[in-house]
Length: 261
Image 1 (cartoon, rainbow, N blue to C red):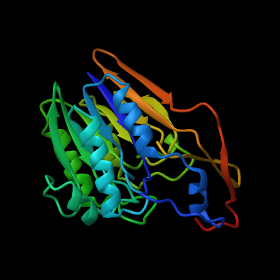
Image 2: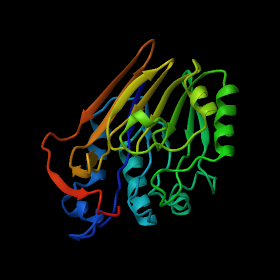
Image 3: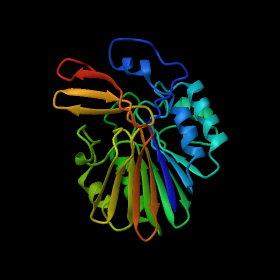
């Protein structure tokens, strides 16, 4: 089984022009839906996974453009989790086959695996939020599964996956994620590719189709490095993090001691 894993489109129908603050990175940004179209057309895969932050501002018209692109160029099953930039009620207006109105937790079975989409997002809260009830729901879904589990969520769950803070989770959930029933834990949010096996489980972050952000001591640096991932899951797990474009334009450097992002 080959998974095509994309995330963090941060799509806007019209990007603002500004020289101040975080939004200034969008002055020269490439259209993430054009990138998505090329990826969908030029890759062979069995299932598409989307790791959240589909839209920058969570507007209905942006979700409609995203869904139109997926419907036109993707011809395989797909699953979505939501990110901290997404607005759930607007998302549900476009993705009308989805009945949930609150947290977007859901499951699906495909081939030999149970996929669990685990919503770690709260709009406007960068670090995400997982309640005790959320954690217990996930623990129960894993415990009750007769198949190996693949988890799709937005925020990274372990501190060492990225220099930014991971979402807070209980030790009980951490240990559950590392048991032999959990094959993969996939996340977006960091805009930075990562892969490491801990005990039985592969923790994999994909990059972003919009921009990359990484810190250098007291600075946050934005560049146009954009990645997606293909994950082959058979007897072994093979991960490819694929750079969409090779030229590294530096968008913006923020002093973390002064900037409020």
